[in-house]
Image 1 (cartoon, rainbow, N blue to C red):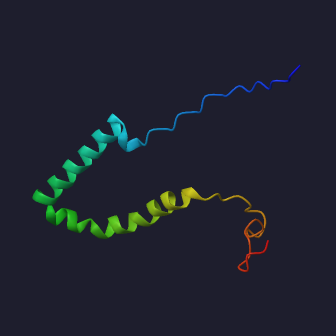
Image 2: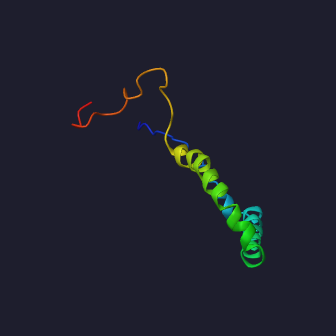
Image 3: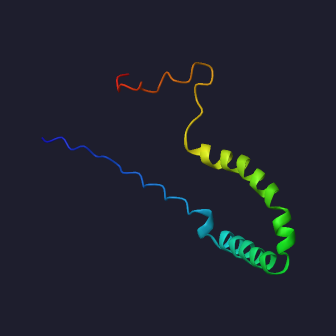
Amino acid sequence: MTHHEHTHHAPEPQARTPWYRTWTGLAGLGAAALAAVYLSLFHVDHALDALPLLVLLLCPLMHLFMHGGHGHGGHGGNGDADRPNKRGTP
């Protein structure tokens, strides 16, 4: 007799749709675009007055979004235990 392995393939989970491709995301982007056009056409002085504040607000926003890709595990140690050294040896 031959032995047959029966493997059951679980369906792959579908990838999540990015927020900007949903109807809510598109509506939000459209509203932001309309607000930007309105401010740039009719309230240039107010928009320019807020520019230094907006630049300062970019710092925490960039920190939140740019650091999301790498894990922050290992805070208790030196933080370099799982990272290879510069010579390429562990």
